[in-house]
Length: 428
Image (tube, rainbow, N blue to C red):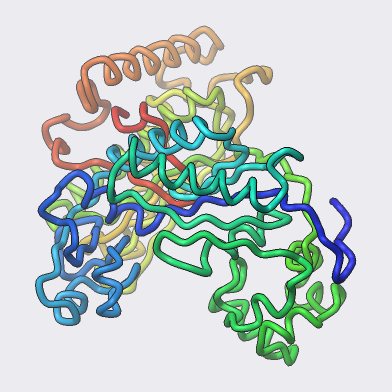
């Protein structure tokens, strides 16, 4: 950790944070000029019963935002355009944006599909230099990525405060937050305006008699430690007061995919196909990343409130044959819990990951062949061949456990804002 600057001291500006404005909706408006200037929402499936995953600023003026029910959004906003998400295109634009930013300065951290951070060197630390760099980046996005692709930029002494600064003016803002101007510079913010304070954390702060930004600023590290229930509170206090934290390397502990099913896939037989499709995608990622899994979890959510879950541990495997066999055992266990009713959402997750370089153990599935390492290697090779064929000829060119034509209209690839899919995933 870097030390917290002394109150009133002029701490150097170290981070420039880029936050794309209404990213998914802006990409759709860039690709489809007829949508520009119009209220637009992006949805996972074309249904009035789902929720918006993005809203253009024209839609936000009517109170429509991420999470708004589509039917409600249509009533709130006359003339609303509803667009089904094109996740592959959002990833393509993400890479174009990174390339453009790096024409001006290297990207140090990719926070999400629409957030990037640049760690400024001494030459760029002076405020006028950092602001000029931000303006060049903003101009470059308009000139080389798209005329409706705008961003808000925040500049501050650490990445957290730079993120806060980027949220101060939207869309198309540029703000600098200096430690020496705190707390007054941010005193107008609500607690939930701050990253890391959501609907669950706010009541805990209120219980500690912290109701405003000034209350939060004046709280001690020990008080925030109690509110957070651990060192997360200490880290939050440190960042809020201008200190920087050393980044902790992220270790992959699970690989998984979930999907809200379109109505035509919600009957149990069709939903079972989707579960296999999600597993094969996760298994392909597992192999591409060089891991084996030791646990598989399946979750299903019915159109009602019923939920079903099943889980199994096993010796390390990465091949699709063994993993599919495990899923076939878990599926009826999870479906029994929801009475084999229509399925709205499915999640498949591989846990307990270990590197392929770890020593291989005896075969878990002798019925698939002799329980020797050579047979495990054979199934791994067959799985890799399937991966290569799908990358070469397109998703579901070859499948395991279902007819490819039965899921041609289904794509399990989507973007979680904290993880950007690699391009290969759109063919897995």
